[in-house]
Image (cartoon, rainbow, N blue to C red; front, side, top):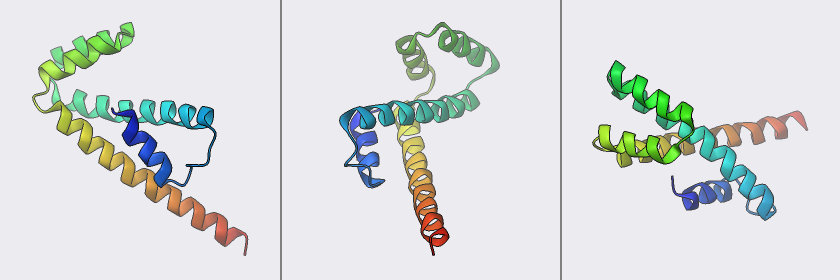
Length: 108
């Protein structure tokens, strides 16, 4: 996932004024959450044999090999990733808005 898209999401959330360290930490957290969503979706697209193979690769900690495996076995992986990013973005922005509203309402 492009880091710039996640940095853009951080700005959309209103966190542009965070320190660079805080932004970097947030990018790492968002990346992990997004990766989990993509992997869950990819696993649903694979055969049982492919799921087991990918799971072993992921458990080995070799991210590049896992990405290569997914590219090889998911014809439109880039579209899957983009779809998941957009869904993740929308859900994150909605939750952020709801949280802000809840805080405003509790302060009244």
